[in-house]
Amino acid sequence: SSGINAEWPLRPGTLSFAIMKNFSFVLTILLLLGVLENASALDWMNGPIRDIYYLGVSSDNRMVIAYRGMGSVYIKERRGLREYRDSNWMRKNAKYGNYQCHYAEFPVISFPMTISIVGNTLPHSGRSGTVRKPAVETWTRARIAANGTPISQNMYSNKNWY
Image (cartoon, rainbow, N blue to C red):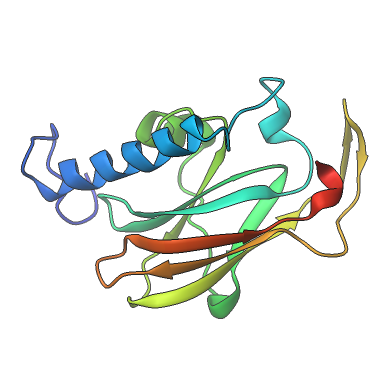
């Protein structure tokens, strides 16, 4: 297994266990708040990028961002930072949980920091009709602590999808 502190199997008291427990907690809260709920099982895959959340640093030392919609996300302050593309959605769902969202993994940057995560909608046609690239994309401002965990997040949504 790659990354730092990637003990397997996960054991209580290890850093990997604490990180995965934190991911589980964050995703459970998002589900309980109804943020990641959908009317259809496929709605999370379609439409403009929305519901962007910084989740933290994974056990294999990657920044993890969850989002819904068709397209991608990028970090505005580090535009040159490229998303890892070495894993497909099935592996990411197995790793982080199937919460009806996409997961983007990026190299870790220096913390503490405040970042803006911006959606990059891919224009497409589908069950809900034609989706054009919005004039203003949804974005999230996340304050990140020195250990890589989120302190606070504010999302600025493109409301014409809802």
